Length: 274
Image (tube, rainbow, N blue to C red; front, side, top):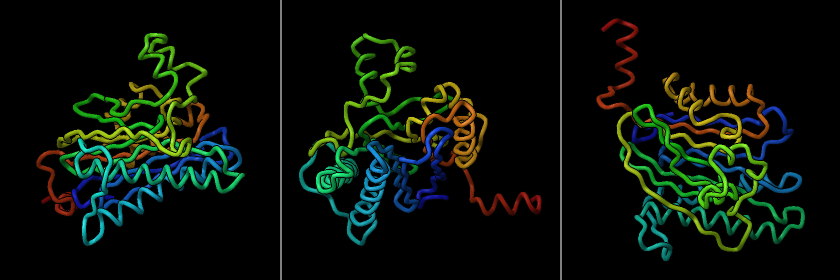
């Protein structure tokens, strides 16, 4: 699919090879350039409930406050943020409130939570908000960079020099989060903005990808495959082949290369040799 800003977007979620249920969810609104990935946690089906609340709440608020006849800017929040940053922060905090209150109201959902990474992107600017260890990467000029920082115990230990990055990647403490939606009444949301350039590729994923593939392996796929849909399909396939120990959810979005023409014109050219 293509946004009104011409971003090409694809996204899929897969249960993986070990788990019997999928606690991941995703949301895409092509008109708004909205991308959301959430990885739920909790007993029974509560993880799935939490991640669905997160993705649907963020999407619904975005459609009302950005996609309606009048753009609405929430009051309060971090005064240093841009309008889009304030909006994303508000959407994510609203999702936290919904999950937290539902967990308190229904004993079977008590303690449920979810990670979330949400972005608003067009062909010039990326605004991203996240809580937990679902990630957003930027692939530019053949180099893959992790834009978000995991809110996890092992990440904190790496920052303190207690673990190396390689030790953290193989630690049995990887699943311990220091921040998640629904865990507390209030949550701190990390929000950032980054300029985008022609040809940039955005990759959002739950940890079902990072557990199975290194950044170098992911970058190799992005070099090989030309379209977001092929990237998503290939990464899910290779994550499954590597063991697929967790649910795998991936969204890929590509900024058109500089001078990219009308796709219909290109199709006509390929058919008629024009």
